[in-house]
Image (cartoon, rainbow, N blue to C red; front, side, top):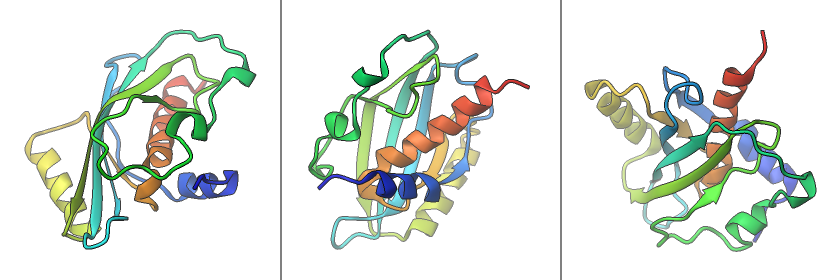
Length: 164
């Protein structure tokens, strides 16, 4: 099952970015860790947690638009496999930005605690560790979490490349 453009747009729009890194990822660091939470799509569990790190390469990319991959070409037309351990992928919404984004680390966990309790625990842990680099995202559809991660990254890139 693949998503229509309107379904992807809805997930993108309903994504909540709870916490952003407190530094510039393109001008500073080039690794962006994140935690994405959402209602579990796995029966018997309440929450799906996805931890990952996005590698951001601040370089100029020239690529014709007709060569940009579609969502199906990157992730396939089937649903995300619950046994997935890792996958390398790029983010498709960055075509007007001079960066390349890819994810090379992925940890998907199904939890019994509700999303709000997991969110609170994640925020407490980040504060305890004085973590200023990890983003925290709530997705409206954890099966298609990459759309929410793309929204998170796009917001950061918009801030970094905005002309004032």
